[in-house]
Length: 342
Image (tube, rainbow, N blue to C red; front, side, top):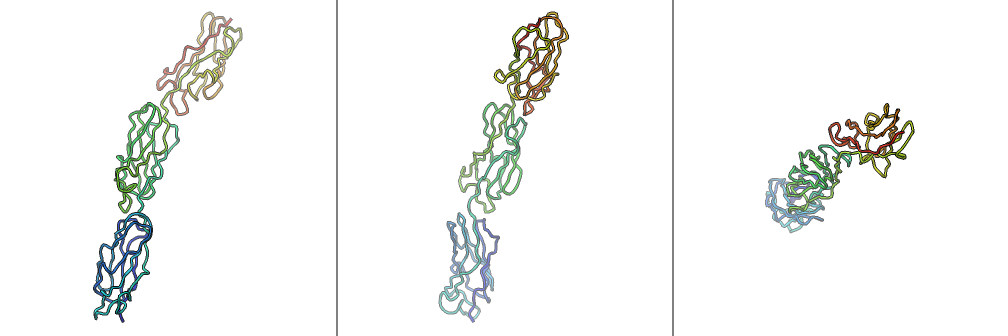
């Protein structure tokens, strides 16, 4: 009986992402004369594949195939050219080329597409006044070689001093920590491909060549470090009054605060009086956003009445920026309109 091929099976994991794969070829008995010329790669989709080596002895041999680029399938066929024989020199499959061909071996699914950046997203809300922020970077497959030098910050406005602090994570996801620096504006994280990032098959991000894997379309943070301020305090009604209470009102059109604020209460205001007036008190504060109405009891006597904002660091914008900035008194306002009280 002539020798035959029993099987050709995969010797590596499937799907294949590396630069080469191996097949294990098993014969029905001990044979010799097995070499590269006996095998042909059968592939679809990928750009190229070549048999690089054949090792082994007896009944078992290992065929190594180098892979080109792209994605597709790969198997290896044995082409009987009568060079393979058993111990009594009987040819594979019997006398005659092609009698011992084997073309039904196992197939690899090959993924040799270069890895790419799928997205760079914000880890938290878009609007922030935080000292540091996180970005989440997602790749198309597991990669290695990702570090701080692979990223670049793009900022607008008055932002300055922003730095990439660290990169953490494995597989297809990384978390990048960024120190925001000072000022306000938009802050975006870009990936600049320097061919250090590679997949398991050592294929560089975006393929061979610097910049092929660049990603500059990530999400931005809107950094707001500008403290809110009082723009104006105006009278609700005419300048002269005989009322026992006077409303100081801020309208949207005049804009009292430069942006929506919270933490506004009676302790943030003080009446400033002249003449014989006494006993003026803050009776109530109502409103929201940028517009607040303060009711002031005028007390007794005649004179002028002005409403001042006394900054005690309780008033903040929606990102916790303090009125006028950190420090008591930095946001005080003492130039509002006055009533003549009679």
